[in-house]
Length: 410
Image (tube, rainbow, N blue to C red; front, side):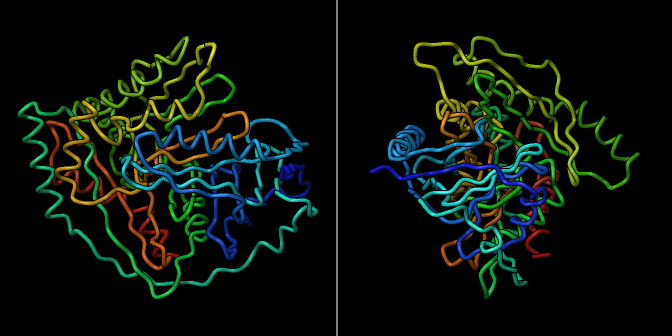
């Protein structure tokens, strides 16, 4: 017997996403929000943990199996309506990836807001899903930076010896509390400070990333590449000068070129046409600026067309989070980095019943442990021959700032 799932329009709820972001239901939040659009999920209809080299194919197969057991009544239609699979994949194939289908889902795009829920009961009352959070205090511990600077120096020497061209080296710090950390409150703070990023939460992974790995809408493919970073000063005139220096920086342009090339090489075989801009633009966030390039394409009209799972599998890991050449950079990370990335720098996002969806790279994020009272936050920097350990450390500090601030204000 198939399980009923229904999607209906909601009226009179323009601020519903913001309300949901501030709420604290008993279960961990499931979220994907950018600006005033996106999804908030409550509860769990189905979930699974997977790993292995074929984890993207395993995720696709599991999602298709779930859909076969559903009787879907979609009264809204369009991308992102109906049941949604949320996925957060590990950076490394040996680590755990997590898939979840929420029991209740609120979606918003433009002026349209809708709700999707499983079962034969009537439409859930949103007010029953909302509770108020309580404040906490975190204690921080981890690498002060000295060891990490030494790792950067070691990597630069390897690059100069032509063992690898670029390696993205990450670092992490750990926060702990005497009570559960409220992921929904962190999301609300990140959303208010960084509204142009993709704010996400999935099974204990929470963050606000500026980097879109891939979006598939019908047959249009989009990937935003970020590589090359400079910290903002807070002064508009100085920041204009800093943006200009970033756009001229040979070190940052070299790092960016590697990342764009890796994305273009991954999607070109799957597309009938692609558009790869010759020069990046400078993306301004509230605390940093990045060199950015939007790579686009149209999927090939093949007998067996590609889907979002195949695109993610082809793109991950890109040079923006791993390096160039991919295999040599991955080996250097395994040798030098010194900790498990978990789902940091892995693909995180959603898929609908049409296999359309969006995946970002899980950056500017943290991962909660099973107790919910400890969180590890991460930052990574692209190391090339011209990298300076002090400058790279300063960049990593700037990248850690969004999560540290959200947790400290939590």
